[in-house]
Image 1 (cartoon, rainbow, N blue to C red):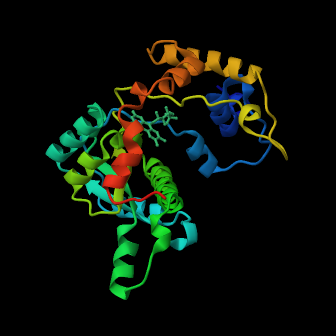
Image 2 (tube, rainbow, N blue to C red; image 1 turned 135 degrees about the horizontal axis):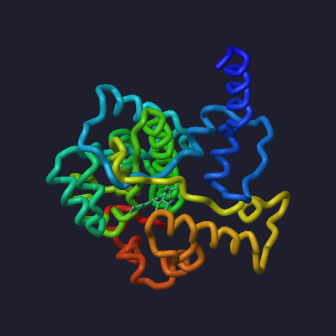
Length: 289
Ligand SMILES: Cc1cc2nc3c(=O)[nH]c(=O)nc-3n(C[C@H](O)[C@H](O)[C@H](O)COP(=O)(O)O)c2cc1C
């Protein structure tokens, strides 16, 4: 092949190459992908590549990775800088097995080398107030529990973005709220501390495929200036079909999105014990006034 031919075929390849944003947006939205024009960078490529990982290699995290992930988590915004969250780092196999049992037997909690439990933690401020002999009326209210749960979620999501950037994978475990008091006993939590969710962390097992799960089209979730109630949104029907195709590609039953959502929230039984959350939190010292 002559130099001119090589140059020509290279140029062709460059022209053929799909820009990273088109690829990332197509994976996330299918044909209903938005046009971002030139608003793109490598952070966005990373964010749009997120997928939950439920199969892990046994390899532990490299030295310093946990500290870097926690630094990212602590860099998230915090309501009034109250920092009302903590995290318990669980590596012990037997403890992970017990936590898996409390969370409906999810196998990835046993398999992932690291399990992080993100906590609502009002005990730090409770102790400060006790030592200073000062009132903390504000801690008794639902608002403060919500603040701590939001803080924990923002911190955890920063952790997820950080660990994914290091080639690791994760999956949130909301099922820890099925049995918050058992989890609290297992982790030795003091009063005014409650698990918000867990996070399995480790290297994804390359033998088990995982794919980017499509999301609702932007026109379904974005409202301009005021909320537009849409009695029957055809964007949802298109998404339902897209998710059905995704489920088939993953070897899952093609239930679509609407059916999955209605089933997940259709009955008290489907809450798997979380219908008792208020009482469980009260038993952990939260008043939720
Ligand atoms: C707060 C929270 C709790 C979750 N709990 C669980 C869980 O207990 N088990 C699980 O397998 N996935 C859990 N997930 C993962 C979701 O199912 C997943 O994020 C969703 O299906 C979208 O898929 P993706 O993360 O791959 O994009 C949870 C996600 C969030 C945000």
